Structures are given as structure tokens and as C-alpha cells.
Image 1 (cartoon, rainbow, N blue to C red):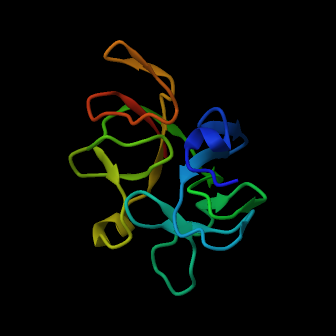
Image 2 (cartoon, rainbow, N blue to C red):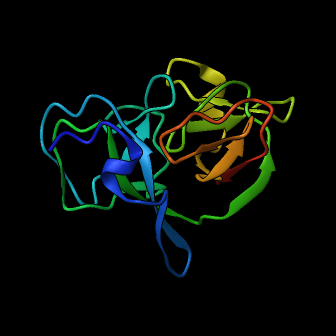
Length: 157
């Protein structure tokens, strides 16, 4: 099954928490082959995680790994983030979705990370993780709906 939305992976953005780690739904690209549990992930383009490739400097060892048994041609998957904490009431630089990979700018807002932006390699990335259920403009929003730059958000950091 091609998982093209966060809700296709799990009903909530955070699935499990342990001693120093969190399993979270994350946005991924370039899944053209089988990815397996435990494989390291690194920053990709536009807030997407990609599979770690040797010889690439933008990988924080053991930071984020694939947590589900196998991912194949999906755009969302379950990842395990080590050394995790959730930062509440953060501000986004734009309209992003739960699962997007972000870094905090000098202005304090969170923007989508990009492997081609040298400054992002010096920042510790996070994942937009909520709130997944909220009311915006009188409309109930869910896990697959974008969060706006004016909403307070949670970042798995």
C-alpha cells in the first residue's frame, strides 16, 4: 500500500515513546526501493527524510532511523528519533504538515529543512508533530491538514 498521508501510517503522529526515543510519523521521499527497519535517515529536500547515503556529510549518526519493518514507495513512514523531546507552542515559517522535517531559524521560527542549504547542516532537525487535532477558523482539522504559520505547534526535537 502506498502511504501518501500521515494517517495512512498511524492514527496519531506519535505512536510510541520509550526511554530516550519516540516513534513518529515522518514525511519521506526517494523511496524507490525497499527501506528496512534500523536504516539511518538524513535531511532531504523540502522537509523530507531520505535514506542515508555513505559519503554524505549531512547525517547525524543514530539520530533518526526507520522504525517500521519495511517501507516501499511510500511518502510517509514511521521513524524512531533518539534523544527526543517535544517543544510546545512553536511558530512555523509557513503552512506545513505533521511529519514535515524542520530546523529552527535564527528568528526562532521553524522552516522546512533542505540538504542543499549549508546552514541547515549545522542545525538539529525536528519533526512537526502537532497538534494533530485542532479547530481552525471554526473547522475541525486533523492529522493530514496543514498547520498555518499563525498556529502554535509542537515540534519533536
